[in-house]
Image (tube, rainbow, N blue to C red; front, side, top):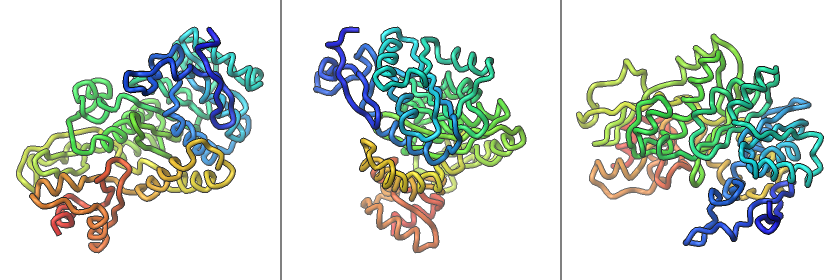
Length: 393
């Protein structure tokens, strides 16, 4: 590991060596982390900051243990140890030999040798091995390069009762239906292209995790879910209970019936999907199963905001994190997302401002807010007919 290939940085409360960004630039001058000898993505700092917030407000145990099976430089495991009260031990793993050595270097640099166990093993093998030895974790953070689907079973199995499973997905095209063939295969779902790909992607990911959890008599509660730049991120609480897992499947997993002609969509049981669109008579595409319950917890987000404005005000992406959390707080509780541009195109009218549509929805006694999912997305409890009326109004 040549010292000239690495630079020293600080992120949160940790110091660590990471690849020298200047040596791995694309022709457009942007750092490409996948070209570096060890993966470190500074664009994921927001992801890590929000993880610190959620873990800090949603876990209150002492002597907590964290598993980071795709550790790269070790930054995520080290930050959990340094910044989340009660975390006493971290397991940091990466199958790459260079990463394994760098993790050890960064652990020593932060004087955490007694609290970090470093492994070099395939991620699923490590998670199942730890479970077979009776070791479970308060936090399992799955942040692979690409799809997390192959690691969800082991992740769910490795989380202790009431612990957190955090999952990052960078394969947004398959998840969102943009590459629906690959997404259908990887996530065992019906997929198609829609006008709200990020809505589909996030809720398909939660739904997939929920189904895998239910197969192990576990159920999930989404605490925070969002999209940023090139990835989806979901943080879920996992609990044991066969009856609750069955109830979760019955109450919070639905299919979306979607009309590409007029934009109509509704969430329903598969057996309740209509044959034709009730608005324009077009054929309906079936997408799912999607998570149909809240994708974030208002309480968790509100407490995260308070902590961000207090003890954790030092976080590197504070302003960006606060802006996103405020949007998520407003969106929490709405199960549907529509696009103003889709409705305007079908109605053949000029596209109104999103704020005007929200005002109209509220005047009808409905709810609605601008969504972080896209520039003209509105999260609401309105049906498509009411939404069309407000766009046309």
